[in-house]
Image (cartoon, rainbow, N blue to C red):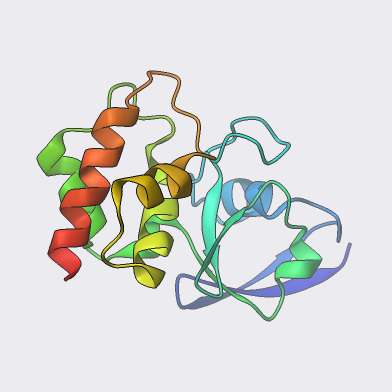
Length: 153
């Protein structure tokens, strides 16, 4: 089995896996970073969103061989103490209900706000539209993104 050197949350990991193994399963099963969740396995729900070179990506669609040489950030690496402005906003608005999708939601929102720190409501809705929430907490999610954007500006 081939070995891959991955840079995840500013640490380097050497992992053995089949080249076509989704990064999601390497994160969860080989590195024990379980904040990234499995939702659908086909890139449609957003539960597995991580940052790859600063961009939000679905880790269920990215093969481990493709991730080699890239900088990957998971929810565990977004901030050392859970104090990223988006994480703070999530707490302030009290977004989570079941919480399952929240890591993916936060990773999508933080990548979006990095590129657009003062978005309109429509831009927020469009950016977050690809992340599914089983509890339908969409209004709270949008509110938290607004709160986070104010923290970032």
